[in-house]
Length: 81
Image (cartoon, rainbow, N blue to C red; front, top):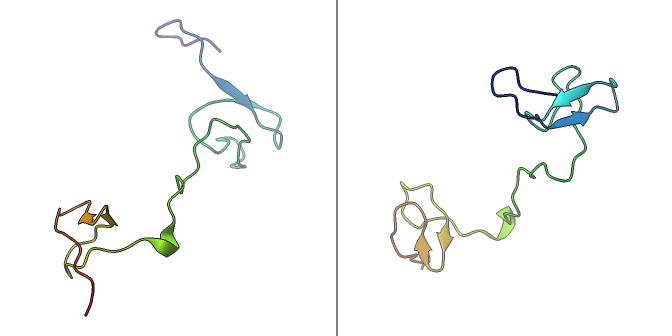
């Protein structure tokens, strides 16, 4: 499909459920809502290991500790005693 404004070729995917060519705007078909199977669509979890993460020891921060320091507030991790 060609863009009306810039004339560039737009990426499209084929939806196997409704048999439509759809623009690559997200992981779901905008005609029928089914997931589009494409290896370039990113996974939502991005490889995060939620079960083994360490939360910030500051009771008011929502950050996750990485390399001994909170990624949000920058405070060093202090384990519970």
